[in-house]
Image 1: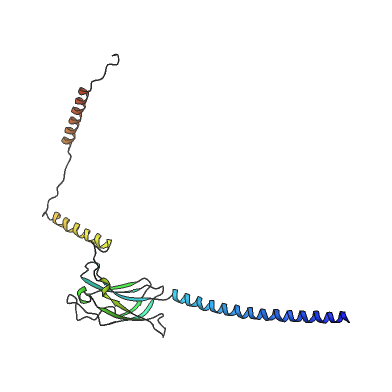
Image 2: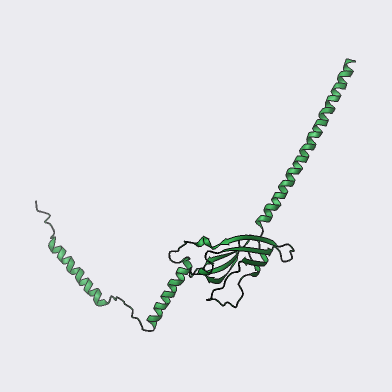
Length: 232
């Protein structure tokens, strides 16, 4: 009788342990499913963020003259952007030095590749200094996409207040300026308006230099006569 009771007790203990193990396995499976789902969603978000376009429109000083500014539209993302629309509030001014009858440039761009930028002269810096613009940009991530990506930010020209430059802003601009000066100098020489100064060294100069060298050697030998080896 005691053996029967002990067997029943062992049976219930193993059944309880099996049920508990099954319950733990079920909870672990659910937790693993949740963690895998979150990881997959974050991976998709990261992949989308690293393979999308990022369009910006800025007003920057001209590389050739800081008295003027350019409108620069750039794609700093890793994917092309299509059907780009740019709006500035207040609207961008057009200087008298530019043709005011033309529309503001780069307000609509059909496509912009990654790391590509478009640049156009805009106006004088004084026309936009101390102004703040609200910039709204929208684009399509794919030519057939229906939803447009949008970004909106404030562009303050006070960022350039007190900024100064020493010399050319770009080495290429400095190089082009030096080549321009060299071309202008050579043009005056080719037309005979300026003479070249050249120092020549002819055969007579070489003979004179040789005679001077020989005379110097003779003078050195006279000043320092050879010592007598047999003298005490």
